[in-house]
Amino acid sequence: MNAVTLENASRADRGPEAAGRQDADPRESPGLPAAAPVAANDDAPPPRAAGRIGEWLAGAVRALLPPAVGIAVMIGIWYLATLPAGSSLPGPVQTWAAAAQLFADPFYSNGPNDQGIGWNVLASLQRVGIGFGIAAAIGIPLGFLLGRFATLSAMVGPIISLLRPVSPLAWLPIGLLVFKKADPAATWTIFICSIWPMILNTAQGVTRVPADYMNVARVLNLSEWKIFTKILFPAVLPYMLTGIRLSIGTAWLVIVAAEMLTGGVGIGFWVWDEWNNLKVEHIIVAIFVIGIVGLLLEQALIAVARRFSYEQGARS
Amino acid sequence: MKKFVLVEDAGMRFATKKGPFVALRDVSLSIARGEFIALIGHSGCGKSTLLNLIAGLTTPTDGALICDGREIAGPGPERAVVFQNHSLLPWLTCFENVHLAVERVFGAREGRAKLKARTNEALALVGLSHAEQKYPHEISGGMKQRVGIARALSMQPKVLLMDEPFGALDALTRARLQDELMKICEATQATTVMVTHDVDEAVLLADRIVMMTNGPAATIGEILAVDLPRPRDRLALAHDARYLDCRAAVLSFLYEKQAHRESIAA
Figure 1: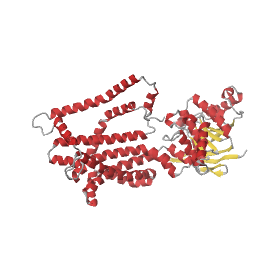
Figure 2: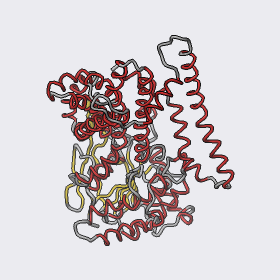
Figure 3: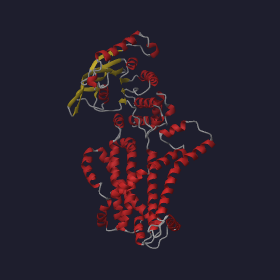
Figure 4: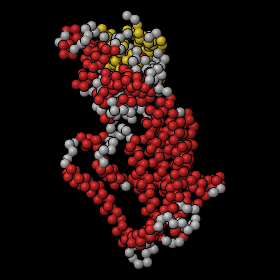
């Protein structure tokens, strides 16, 4: 799990950049249901159209300039580091050329061991989707039960605490043994690593439902079904989405490692295959692709979470 | 007058690490139908505990409570509560918040159109027809509290219980809502119990003011009947001798007889 924590830390480092982008978003589309501070901005009298566009541009530059400079510096260092003759690492230029070639035809297929990078990414995403979907189907209801019934939580809590720190890759041999095939075994590791955050966050959300809301339910004498649909579920939703976001992030980390071990089609296997072919520039391309896909997954889930956060900063 | 709500020797003990803590003891009170009772006392005197007992949200460790001839065994829509912090569900619009209550109480007997009409009516009663489709975070604190009142009234409760409903509001908003509440109580003849720490509010609104002694082991100290004619007008009352007498009586109870002993409070 060391790799996981390191990756999370680096994600946190990216924080300011991501935050900058979030600030820019509502300005681009002021019609969106936004959080209170932004709504307060909307109260100001609308400036004239020209001024508004100018402001928008200035905002976009302010938000985009620092990340652009950061990336440029990174590429510059990379270029300088790979400049000496005989460097084993390919530089940005070679990598760009390799990437252009790869993405010219990402969906070719010459048998199971030689497929385009697009197919490999999709195969990995499919595994993540299936493993993660099963984990959500089991983990979220289980989280609700653990949050609602303290005894059950006391029973299962220690088991989760024991299993959660285990690297999901340790479960891979068990998966191979049970399923006899590599593909479901990789999905199995995804399932294992995604289920914990979903159980724990959902359960935490249930225990954090404000007592006031439950008192309302008691005074109105609502049925269990109404309590669930009108109070419990909406109140827990933000916590659940946090769990889902953590799960997806971890799953995308784990799939690369799992596929390196199981083989088949998939971005992790592809990286290993290119290592065997000593095409290091392809490995670097793959690193970027993995990073971008992970970023997109996370941003999509943040957008969903923002859509469902009713009271963040809005409620007195 | 018929005794509508009856509290008989009610007491409330909480188990704590240092042993049992007596919050309330020997509370006896009878409330007539249509009466407006204000519960007043220093903080920590168990006003809210008593209100929660009547609501059924907590069950007394001693004594019994009766509402309309039946023992109070748990919370229910016939004893509606307006909570201190409005407690609206933030993911529902004002309409939906009220409709949830209406649906629960009348859904089994009445059609959709009737339920909608009841919801509209309740929101109109508190002057919020224009904000029906707004979410709680889009409206002011005073409006939220009015939606909370509308939700409680929409259930046509036998008893309306209010836990410092205007405590968090500014003085002007509070005064307006007090006037509205008086009109609503006049119109619906609701039996009301309101917890407050505001002497003027208590005298203005209540038929009787129940003054609580300081906790722990708080109980009813005095009960003051407010014999002011209704409808009451806050401006006219400001110089009314009877109003000033009532006010003085409550103040003297709070600040002479029950002067807050800081050493205990701390």
